[in-house]
Image (cartoon, rainbow, N blue to C red; front, side, top):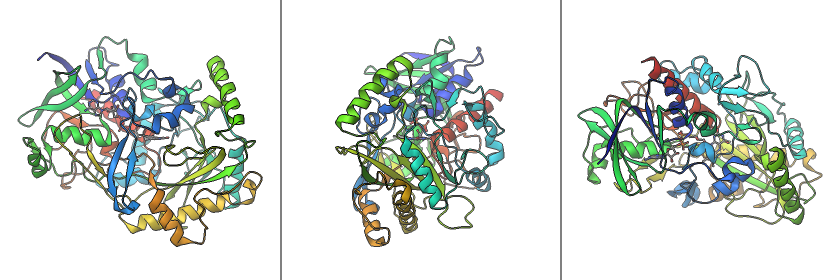
Length: 534
Ligand SMILES: Cc1cc2nc3c(=O)[nH]c(=O)nc-3n(C[C@H](O)[C@H](O)[C@H](O)COP(=O)(O)OP(=O)(O)OC[C@H]3O[C@@H](n4cnc5c(N)ncnc54)[C@H](O)[C@@H]3O)c2cc1C
């Protein structure tokens, strides 16, 4: 078996892995090997923002397209879990909304015993990562790799949403990533020049010519090589053959909320009895691996609109607009092809006096049904609502010891009734917004019609149709030494195994109140600076 040697070996070129590879190779004397299971990010569907539904709706070469185990809280349905499998990872198939979460979330991580993770301590890493095209103040960065902007294309319907939200008491918020999160707004997005700015485009692609960076795509890591209690390197499979890379300094796992616990378990790090049941030799009994899975449960409601409304839909008019949009994007990188569909949004408190908003709305200028897996002829609008800090907890376990097998994903959606009750409140709030006067000129019949005052019907429709907002986290959680379920310490070093870190969304001890791409990039920025500082 051939063996190469580098200073660092990083597993996974996703949101976090691309940041680490780029930052660590800024020093020309540091060598890095970046292993990615997926292929290069060459599809135009990745780069043209309008391609999101096509990327998300089905399993493909760039989307793992996982299914969960049957969910009792969802009336026994299996949930769907798309995940990116290409350069940029999930940031190459995500909805591109730039959201950091609330100050409270990071202060809370600090209160859980994670020194150095308060909001004031993480803010500089958000700022360092960012190049914000419009907002220049102490909350935002200029000159960072991750480009953030307001979308180039807007729909007149977004203004209806903002007025409707105002009519229900939600003030317009000029910057939900700034001093105050609550209110209604237009989403900031990770775009550059009318194209998706994934973590790969921001951090990796511009630096691929560095001689000290070795990127290997279509290379699936099969296990971390461990000698006693020290990580020595990684074994990976490429082209049907096994290879080895040794790490002189560290192995860093950045394989995401499902991939990272899987690789730890395949390497003998996890609950000893679970590993033994699969015939895996135990390197370190670490019971938190794969536990503490948290995800945003999402409920979407849709209404039909006429074809003349400024929405994206399946009609002759829609097709003509689309064709013109394609020509415009080819020539100038502007127009309809730059839409993220999810134009408007809101953060809301279900009750006054809460320390932070507990619900998020994602308003979409199209009909969204079952992750775009069910398509409808005609035009429409949709509103998603999410429980920001769910009480429900899930778990990721091995299906088998074959690294190419998917893990068993059990998000435990709505296993805690408090999540259902909050989602019902959120659904009522969003329905009031869409059923208010500003939408009257375009609002038609509701798909899956429910009445605001019929709580029993809302509960049932939620159990029948709610699913992920694509933010699984927490399966290798960071925690203090006295927490037996902590997988990594506050510097993201795996407890009990030297020279091994996990750096990605899986280390979040609790889910933050917002989308998870920018927070994952922030986590990787911080880890890179600690590693560089030695
Ligand atoms: C459909 C969708 C929409 C979303 N929308 C938004 C949004 O609008 N805004 C937002 O902020 N967040 C959004 N998110 C969430 C966000 O993109 C993720 O939280 C974030 O990308 C997670 O980053 P990560 O580094 O933890 O993992 P990932 O980016 O998923 O990266 C993991 C990488 O590791 C690779 N890998 C895994 N196992 C192995 C192995 N054994 N060997 C080699 N490579 C391996 C994978 O192929 C992948 O490339 C969305 C996610 C999805 C899926």
